[in-house]
Image (tube, rainbow, N blue to C red; front, top):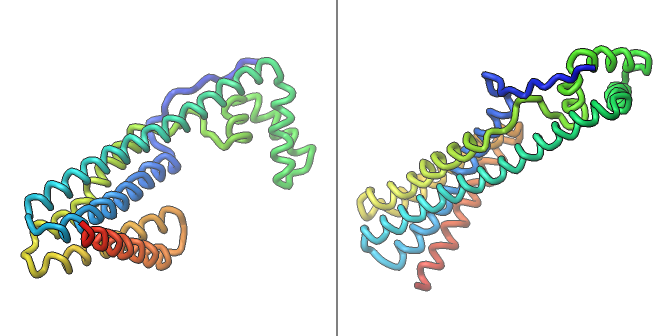
Length: 232
């Protein structure tokens, strides 16, 4: 039996691929906000030199952005390599143990509540048309040809981390002196609340809980780094 080898990248991203890119963006933004404000608070307490504060914040913003991007690239690349390895293994099994693969598909539908007779018919029908696509979907939940793109995740994380870090950086360095601290605190609380909202929406979680949790983490981060600055 001829095995389908349609591994070409589809023109349109799947929902899972889009969500993965968005997830990387949300996490990158949140990380950018908190790491930059942490450095800004520590340095701003220790010195009033605006240029020093700005350079410290900007340096951390760039370091955070590239660190997040490289981490996402490595992580998603590993996932992609694993998925390709699974596809290669299943391609061989379809040649050497087709009956075993057919049984795996039949057993899958049987476990979903379909009768044995019907599950066997479904398995034979699917495996006669798209055997490789069917088996990787049934056994691993992989859509053939749709692999996570590490570059999408990396760039999403890079730009979102940089964008997130801009909120506290701009507030701390451009807002006039007496409003500097409250403006930065407000910028951080609002921005992390937004990332909490987005992460909850993407993960179908509790929006209010996620927003409150992020704001609390942001406040704790600022308190810790403010305290560190007092020791400098």
